[in-house]
Length: 327
Length: 251
Image (tube, rainbow over all chains, first blue to last red; front, side, top):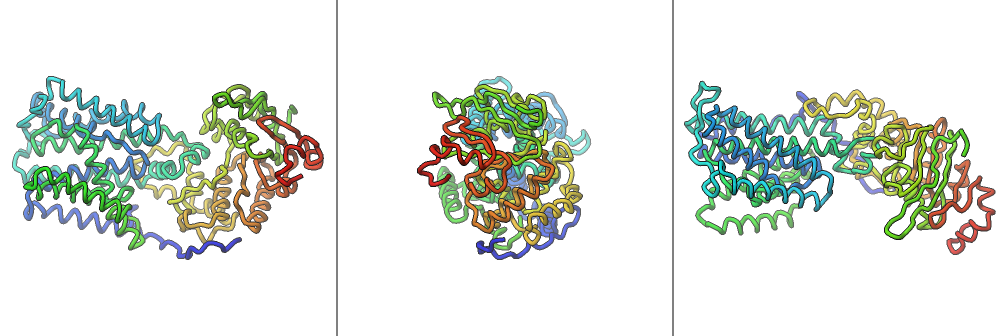
């Protein structure tokens, strides 16, 4: 055996796990949950709910990019269309909020199947362009269709009563409903990443021809992860429509697709907590620097460039490297 | 073509826009042998490999594996039939650990792992077996190391361990010794010899001493066509082969 390599052979510490989760992940999730429980008493609830919706959106996107190795540039299509359908279902059909969200999410799922099955036939930049092209089609459909309200969007969406019982109109009540959805969504994505399916996904991301040569039908896995990612993006969008009581063209425009890429890369793609942090930072900037007007976009651009130059792995990615533990 | 052939190709042709990379190649690999595919650069060896495993679609020709026509199958399905290939560049999963690399192959036994709702801890049932394969190629101490951290020779060893975990009936090795240090060549050579017990191996290799040492039968390709076939003694005396290799400093 050669000894030409200079890598030090420190074996990875055996991972301590509780309920299939490394302890430090469990700890972070627990801290996060406790913080989010008390947060609405310290910070503006609408802002927090926006962060949570985008955190779920970014986590869904990261599942596709960071673990499936697929860069979609059209995730606004699922986020936005789910937002429209959920708003329409709540306002026009008069459905209860959980059913409205379900309708929106289901729409994103179906859209994911249609667009995904066509897009995964191409790779790399072509894949990204196909997803973008479809997303633009969804955008123009939203602009033209009657029910979306064109430039006005769907406004004054009623939050309604959860299961027809609990009035979630007050922000603080809605907050805990949104917390349950987004936290549950993020945990579900966590489980998907750490499932036998997730393990195959990582293999495909790492080396596609090799995965094929081991007998995996990689296109089926790609489609599956695409649809799952689109569905969770839809869940985020549908929830967001109830938070803001609004579904608009912004949700489905290509800049929304760009924003979720930005959040994911800034936080750290392929990490569990990166997209959540990235979403928090970007939403906080938009919120607290809103007085700078259009300059927020410039600042976002600068932060993104600095981020890519200084820590290509994203903030959480760099921390994970420092402490030598996956985050 | 003999009946003993496990894998055979007839009239295998691949054209790329006006250029014929592989031209009417007939090949028969006998069960239980080590068959080498050699030839100067650009002879079409790797293209041949890609055709046989369907990573490329042949323009014409027929491929038969264990008496069954596999010309129309997808590469993943061919792998599932027990015909597994390796790659010229080392094909590991760099950000997975050595153990996880081998486990990906063992995991295939569960069928398709689409169960995204289950914890990956169900995969621990394959750990012991994966460790046995890792020990086989001498990588035990690196089990929890990321594959990216391994030296080149060890990556190739890991690749072989992963391939063997599928327990394939036939292996297609694309330049298993490429870019390897001499000690590694000897080690991998011995390993290939060992795993060839009750398996069939077809390999592309440039290192002629390895070819001479390991292979039962050799097919020489040049400019996409079969130039000669036979055992090493026959092939190395063939004037056409000598001519094809002149300037390369071999034969």
